[in-house]
Image (tube, rainbow, N blue to C red; front, side, top):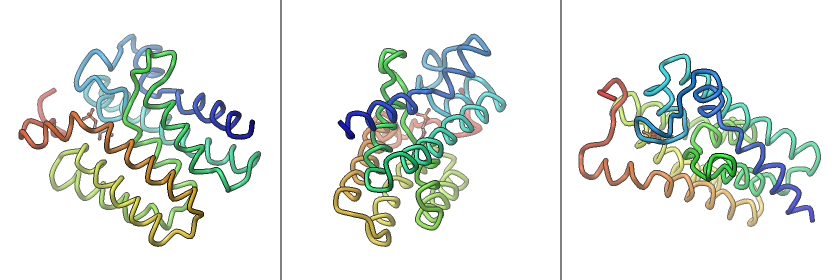
Length: 196
Ligand code: G3P
């Protein structure tokens, strides 16, 4: 019952897609039909411009924070990572978008920052420096997920159940980047500031 209710609340919060709201509702463009086809911040920058990209990031990042605050308030700390995992499922596979959503990076960043700024700051800096040096947002995101697993499990003092969901959240994040991984290997991944 508790698990089901948390799933429902988290999935629904996660499925509020920043790129869909800004793109489709305000600008009349579906980001899934252009660029990488991903309903996320990076593609919103490509397809909707700087304003659309920033707006998308703001909504997706904020919903991660809001999800954590709501679940903490009504259900406590214990199932917080389970809730974040369910929220990411909503973000990545939103029911009202034919299950074609994003890759969960901005939302995970918001949720993890709301859980622990201390444990999230280094993975975030790894993301930032990778993006600035290589111009590949996807590579930064993949390294963010890998370093988050290490930081949360090695330095966080969470339960075994929480650690399992940290692993699942990050594995899901990496799995959602599989097309980026193929492009990175083939040398044709999109770079920021490159052609659309
Ligand atoms: O977080 C998404 C980013 O890492 C990659 O986005 O649109 O280049 O596939 P995209």
